[in-house]
Image (cartoon, rainbow, N blue to C red; front, side):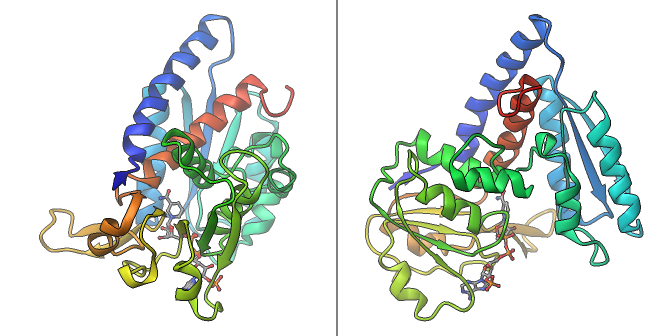
Length: 294
Ligand SMILES: NC(=O)c1ccc[n+]([C@@H]2O[C@H](COP(=O)([O-])OP(=O)(O)OC[C@H]3O[C@@H](n4cnc5c(N)ncnc54)[C@H](OP(=O)(O)O)[C@@H]3O)[C@@H](O)[C@H]2O)c1
């Protein structure tokens, strides 16, 4: 059984990105600048944003963290986005999700200039991803594709089952896996909470991508021998033996499922680290005008 280490791959890509940025700036290019809007003080969001900002610093990328209280109105947030759209110093920006309930997420995402949408959530980027034309890919699916490519996982003609249909993971990853190319060319089934006889689907999977947010949901009886598993789930589970009082749990019951796999991502150290570096890669592509001409 092979461990698909996103942590290791992320380190390799970080070295490449750092060199790439240094070379770009030395050649007279503009230093990339990522802005992050954080609304409220959700614990998970604070952690993710912290990772993003620190990684920017390490790789020679400027970052600006723009904080707002969770009482901010939707219109004030939309004005903030408009400011960043028009700020030539900012190459890319994201609005950290989730947002408070009184703010309509899709309205906020649609307000972002798609040429600065380094999270890849804007309808234009999603549409272009679906057409298999150049775009900013959503960071987590982009990270998953890089894991499959780096570890040379064969995807062509394989049965790929995706558990979960969120706009940020399940749905986009299902599109990428069915696109014509590598990694891709898989035959994809998307399952969700209304799927009947889930186990019948998961047991057919050559590649199983799990993005549910339900700790240890996938058990050994649900998969076949030799399956490749990408476990996206990251849930904080109370654990008194840890200093911080919790541990991170994936959606797969690793101890019993891993022995049946030909390859699997661990949690932590799998998809998580790839998400952050993929966002940074999108930011570098933005400053260089690699996706949309400047
Ligand atoms: N590592 C990373 O970088 C990263 C990035 C993003 C997310 N995550 C993690 O990935 C997990 C999923 O995140 P998300 O944002 O995609 O979650 P989400 O928006 O909550 O979506 C969960 C999906 O699971 C489906 N589902 C729920 N219960 C089910 C069941 N019993 N059987 C089959 N499907 C079921 C839901 O179906 P319905 O649509 O029918 O409700 C939904 O489509 C979370 O743990 C999150 O923290 C990790």
